[in-house]
Image (cartoon, rainbow over all chains, first blue to last red):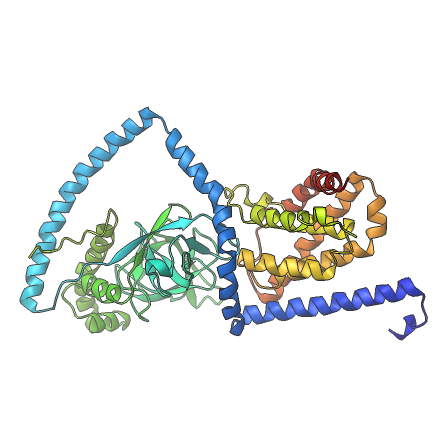
Length: 341
Length: 159
């Protein structure tokens, strides 16, 4: 800026201001780039989030209060109505439960015969959602349960419908869930009907998932149910992910792109279930693939060999209802009917 | 120089602005959420330049980034840009009637949206939906009441 060297005082003030602006801008851009890349900044961030926790709690307070008031204000008639409906539902689920119990008992017997080891129920934990919108472009949830309640990074999060996401950060009293619809998220899946292996990507919209790079020849059609494959070991197998809504050729015309409707209700509900890590993968895996050993079944699904297709569909047929049972079983309460000793 | 009497107003206003920014809203209203923090920072940059300058705007931006869990540095960048423009035109702005001030603030908020969109574009992050461009309008309408409210607190306590 030599042209301004001899200018009067206000000018030099302007120059100083501009220089300071540039300094701050550089600092901000450095921060953005560092944060975008991830890395050591993430640790500082985690620490600092501990400090803003009370702020989130406070911001969520009106919503919680509103929900309480709303609940209180619901009229007696509605309650009676609800009561009647629930009574019906209870009867139906009671009937369903006894059937399940019979199936579970039989399953346990068979398992005992096979010597497959002790039966493990799904170990889950209910966690309320802290209703705070973090950032509209990032699909995340804040849970009102943290490391004090035994939540760990990497735990699978589900709801009554299916897979919701996974825990990516844990603080003493809160935890952050990365939803499967986050643009940064991908989940290995299989088509429940045929066992074709695919990957479902988040698109940043809570009502859409995308199946990218689907080979034109693969056996998939609109309406297919998509479930987790368990590959990669992060998510247990057999949880519903979504339903194929449409299939279109992609830009290259060499592959199909499928649009999925998520099975879980990602944008509503007040609670989610956390699968306890470790035991979940083993137990659901063995549940879902019925009597087949887990690994061989999973790998044979992917290989599109004519010789295995039959075995596949046989292996798959019992697999998906079993997986569904496991999920619907969870819904009211973790009630895997344990054989009482 | 500011008196110790109204020292509390600045941190309190920033705190309330952060809370309002985090307040959960129905999805319908979400795009209309005004950028409260920008309004409050703008007020302080215009009215109390001794305490609130570029550094203040930057610090508040970082604070907001941490509080909102967004990209660290994004709001710092946006608020710094805004504070710089405000400082440049502070002499004129101070003597504008409130309606013209509101127009200027509306312009700044739209500019802020542009900066934000540019940052998202540069990093390949998804853009906010178009409906979010309504927020500056609401921010503009809120400038008058907010200005009078903060002024009332600040000057009322002083006297």
